[in-house]
Image: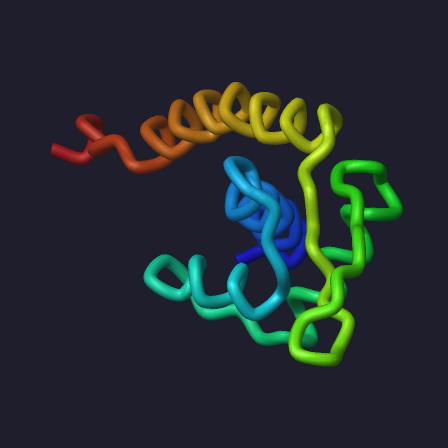
Length: 106
């Protein structure tokens, strides 16, 4: 898969994982696991990129004597998910075109 396409898809997946409630790294990986494998290093790179793009906000909370970062989706992050849904409709059309049976070879 094209690396840029995959990068964009993973960004949207992480946003979707925190869409309904704030979450932290380990839980995000756990929630996504039934759908795709994501390493911690990849996740934290994505989270930093999304934070820089103002698609999520970060807050630290003490948990068992350590600071845990919780991630909260912003309106820009929600917009990115909605934009992705619209873009995906076009991707499906392109896929259908590319995958169609070639009737001229009969």
